Image 1 (cartoon, rainbow, N blue to C red):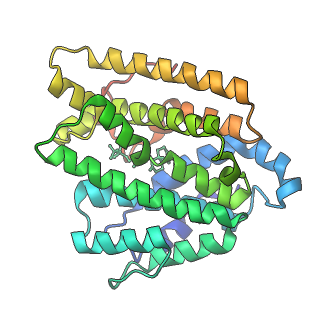
Image 2 (image 1 turned 180 degrees about the vertical axis):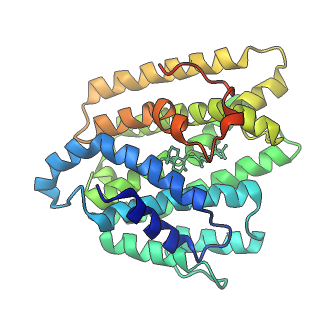
Length: 300
Ligand SMILES: C=C1CC[C@@H]2C(C)(C)CCC[C@@]2(C)[C@@H]1CC/C(C)=C/COP(=O)(O)OP(=O)(O)O
């Protein structure tokens, strides 16, 4: 893998045109991205004979990290109001349609979209990535509006939205685009779409359990644990959500065993399922010490 420092510099340099883009977005993207790539390295190597895509290709790796950094930045644009609403609307348009940004600045958006379009192993993945981006942005907006407004979602409504706002589909699609994982074909299979829903739900519950203390301190309501506590103050929310996690993991395991998806999907889904134990524990800057008690359990 390319040296961390060099990758980080390339993500930072790219992010410079984006107002509000922070070192933290790049650092966390490289940390999480490295972890995912390490987990699927052997499989990527195995399929490289077919795809001709080198798992160590610096251009591909940096493009992946930049997309992850973009996801973090977009999340904070919504959560922290890093940019004006009209700027965010223009940014979303540029990223979701693959066109230049209509407001000045933000060149990084079109730069990244153009490079991903050029690097796409399968053009369909690029089209899907734009669609996943639109879904992600819409879910971030809806989650934010719900938390700020009078209407309170049910747990089911919340989970439905968070399947998109956790952005796992974007992460997978970007990997597929860069290393030829054939996600566009797999998406046609109902079992694969079920896997996407299950792993996204697991990711969302992990994220919310982990971020609960931080979100509560910040007065945020866009978190499953907080939402449930508001509706049912006496509920043992942490136990409930941990049970939900275990149940979803079992359902996921059953589909994965039955369907036997091609490499690297087994290790990739597995990597995302244990990201709580790996990535969140080391992600100091984003989930600082004061977030530590937030629904944490010993990793399964
Ligand atoms: C969108 C995200 C960026 C990439 C990131 C990697 C690095 C793959 C590790 C797993 C999570 C994720 C997919 C991440 C997912 C969701 C996300 C926007 C997290 C932002 O952090 P946080 O403030 O805790 O989330 P939220 O605003 O409480 O939902």
